[in-house]
Amino acid sequence: MIMKKFNIPLLLVFLSILTQWMAFPGSISAQPYSHLSLDPKRIQWNYLLYEVKSTSADVTTEVRLEFPTQAEAKAAMIEAREGDPLPVPAAGCYKITVNTSLDSALRAPVKSVDHLWFDPQNATALGREMLRQGDEDFKKLFRFTKQGVFRHQKEPKDKKEASFEPDKWTKVIDRFYPYDTAKLGCPNIVDRLLLIYIVSASEALDNNQPLSLCVFGKRQLFSVKLRPAGSHSIKVDYIEQKDQGKDRRQAEIKAVRIDLEAKPLESNLESVENFSFMGFLNNISFSIDPERNLPVEIRGEIPPVGSVTLKLKEARLRKSHG
Picture 1 (spheres, rainbow, N blue to C red):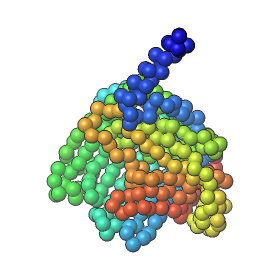
Picture 2: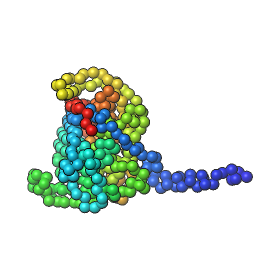
Picture 3: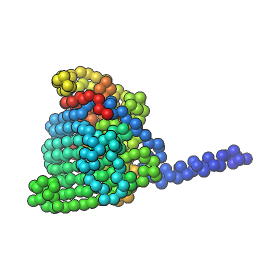
Picture 4: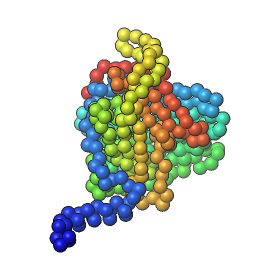
């Protein structure tokens, strides 16, 4: 008599979901991902400068926004040798550049320059260029396609070649990192570099709604959640540059904290990649000035330095674009 009370079809659906979860316990792809609809007009900045100076490390990070045309973006990005490249919007796209230098007594100095082309309406990544010099030297070019990410990498073949310009490095490695967005339930693929853009442009975070994103790291996809974690008082001290001139802003504000959580999705890699964002590996969070939609602080852990807080030192504000 007890068994007659069970709804057999519903029971089978439940068991199917449970089986899938047990098969991929490290994956959080079962939850729905956010269909991003961003408002580029919320972005009031086109240049941000962050710094931190301490006994363990000096870190400087510059972030720039540019607005290339469709033709300019196509000419700048590498041609994918595998997969169908994601199209550049006819109206053009955005380009974000992140320039970082890290000097530490615990490791060799590191300098990196990243360029990323993307759709400003939903943060879909189109192409990326990475140059890193210091503890390791490489130049990587990425093209995002419907089937995965194509990567063209150049490295110096020896110490002598490391002193040459990157375009003269001769060790070349081409790779393709496939994924199935339909199977994973990903509406689109975001690059990790775009998280600073998303926390500035998303109204959902203002309304205390978390965002769940499919984010490409170095070689695989991650399920990333941006979760509002309340507000807290912080002191800001930075130069604010407008068309009218420069002002120094010194104030105590109520900043909104956004915590970042990342878990790897299934891939064909032999070992799981560690998620990173602008050098941070763990306990990553943003502090946003809600009045200006400015990320005034970025916190996290940078091995082997430890906990680091990047503080905004300069913001160049712009007129609305697009």
